[in-house]
Image (cartoon, rainbow, N blue to C red; front, side, top):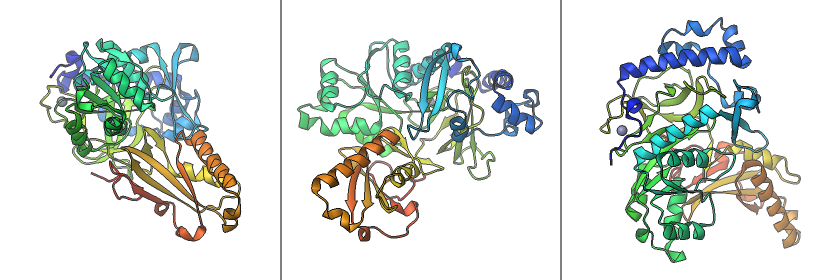
Amino acid sequence: MNEIWNPEYETMSRESLRELQFKRLQMTLRWVYENVPFHRERWTALKLKPGDIRSLEDIVKLPFTAKSDLKAASPYGLFALPLEKVVRIHSASSTISDPAVVGYSRGDLNTWSELCARAAVAGGARSHDVAQICFEYGLTTGAFGMHAGLERVGATVIPASTGNTRRQLQIMRDFRTTVLVGTPSYALHLQEVAPGLGFDFRDLSVRVAILGSEPWTNELREELERRSGMSAIDIYGLSEVLGPGMSFECWNKDGLHVNEDHFLVEVIDPDSGEPVPEGKEGELVFTSLTKEALPVIRYRTGDLASLSRRPCACGRTFARHTKVLARTDDMLVLGGVNVYPASAEAVLLDLEGVEPNYRIILYTEEGLDKMEIQIAVDSSFFSDTVRKLQNFQRHVEERMHQELGIRPRVRLVEPRSLPRGSDARSRLIDNRKGVGRGQSGTLPRR
Ligand SMILES: [Zn+2]
């Protein structure tokens, strides 16, 4: 059970690790200073040069990078390599029209698959496994990262992508899938609908589920494991920094090991920006130590967790962060897609004939988190033909899908059925079962 993909790095002493981190940090800072005007100009304004960072702790002298910086520089403004040397593009985004573009050199792809291989092996995947990947193969990073990592391990990879649940279950049964990769909500969905489609999940061969892309609780893990006798592990990553494989759980399931030979991780107070003591919750901040095409310097993830450097029973020496269950902002993750309520509002306000009076309701259906948007329309609206109302609903759904990448259910309601003059936060009602249970506006803090 306790196999380690790359023991040389994953179990190196903390002292050697810090030395390696500092050496790689210096290289990264010089690389960035020479090749990315955005960072050079900001450091110069603070009278800082790479040589002024004389220890790992000195990193706090450098300014943070935010998602807004990535978007402002989109598509290629923060790249440290010419496009000629960039072999892959992905995108991290909450809206299609406002993307944060990320790029990878050949070396970056090699690093990425190595880190995903570590995550896969820590979760229990081996070369004899048949791995079915149910992340979407597209601009987002989930599918491609774990695909490459599992191939590197030697597993047989099935790029099943998302959707078509019956076909997914058929593949699982006929191809004898042993490792399932996807979002936790989709894993639960598969388990819940299997009996109705004539499948018994317990008769399938799935042994390990490697799940990520959205917050999920230990309670959901217990439920998934109880229902099918598989082991479910959490992986973490965000496209802006690399993608999946940045950190991962081992069999111990007590925090996610950060691949610290490739990332310097900090936890800061989201308000003051100051570092918080070990064990205290704050915002995760990542600096890449080996990335070539798009190095990231003190990238603020918006994800809340605490960090521990206590030794782990698995033997890995990499620090662990707690499961990410909450955010500093109001970003929601629905079916692995990042959505900001403000983006949904922007789409609504852009529609003709819609009052800025709406309510967003999050709910869970067949194990999947979904969004319903209730829009208040003038009572004269309801005197229109049913067809006209349906067309309008479909139009809103389509616009939401184009802009946000999710397809919410749209309901038209009379103005008086919605609370008047409420702020954005109270317009959001979270009835989801898995994570946001009964909370309004934000995911629960641990
Ligand atoms: Zn461990």
